[in-house]
Image (cartoon, rainbow, N blue to C red; front, top):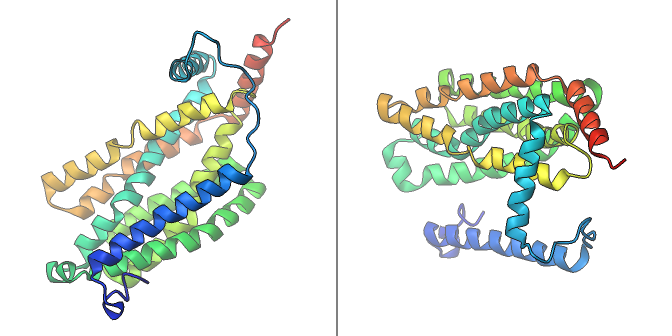
Length: 277
């Protein structure tokens, strides 16, 4: 609203954008202080050894988990699948604004800021719809299982990419595409985390979710790099968005081939073998 009505309240669009960004910082800071004040942390399960520090301990935990993963092949397969399809998701989220601005708005419209106003409204709409999408996919997961629910969301992601490449020509269509992204966004990400929690050793959640985040952030540059290379070589943003299909399709196939029940059995066997006699 600040950006949309900036001129009416005596602000330039640049000032409105700065105030909007500042409001996000106030929001994060305020709720962060609330969490520190009112949410109680559980005590640590293990004490830090006197001759170690937290940085060394953190890297040691990651190395320990990587060593254990050799005995958890299905968990490794799931991690690889997640790394592939999540890279596609993050690239779509990160570069969709660039794609829409280039494909739907003329240089004159972009200079006037029309794309900024539209994209701000689109992103805001996505946040609201994503809430209902996440709750809807939670119900779907109860019926068909989390793995099949994630697979269903990935089929929709693939359809979104194809639609963007072949059929997207108007802002109305872009709103529909944004709503579709919102529906599958919360479900694909939340259910992926939930599914991963089932295929890791109990009591080691922090360590393994550290590996999970590394697999996500450590490869997050690949999708945007592919996108940029395709744009540079073809001059087409549509060809660039279509290039993401390889990430989605490969990740979907690998997830389909992941045996979650076997992964859970492997975790139980690992836990049993490491328990003190």
